[in-house]
Length: 226
Image (cartoon, rainbow, N blue to C red; front, side, top):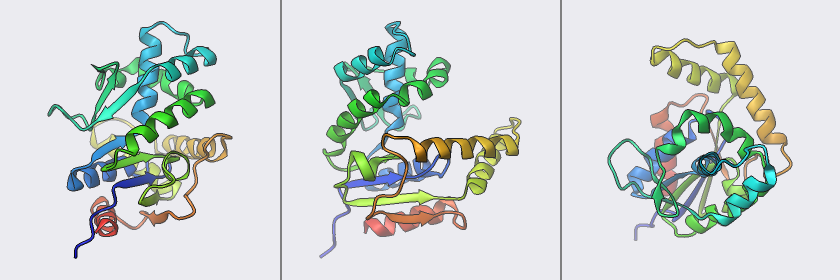
């Protein structure tokens, strides 16, 4: 008798490890919700900006997060989105990609109160099942009961090179050394923060993609789901 795929898949890893790209492919293959938890931090940032709340007022931003339900659902439109992001039934999927959100989301995501409030919301969505949830603390904090936990890793040099190649492929200019420095800095912040530091769950399967291309990573994860 064929085994059904895991209902909850947690996919963690450092910045630029390729987890969003492969996570989206896995979700599509399984007909699951693809949920990159970063969209929730973007949603909070967008709400704060629209409501003219000072981004640097940690208490105000935390209260906003605690008081506002955010939902993430499978795509309802074919317009390039990976999921629908809803706040009070308003579709804000594309608003959260605006430049002003890009410029402020790192401040918001560093607040412990915001992270705690969003963890509750992420758990609510994840426990519906049929989800591939991507982030940095899914298997350790958000959904430690996930049926399958994967930690997708790669060296800082490899991740910086991939990001550099992506930018060059778009016809834009890039400085590899600068990108590498930013990747290393982000790793340091993610692994040393007091709240939910980046690390593999004890029962996570660690996949190092230094010697693997995107298709090979996808195939390995799909094999784990079989």
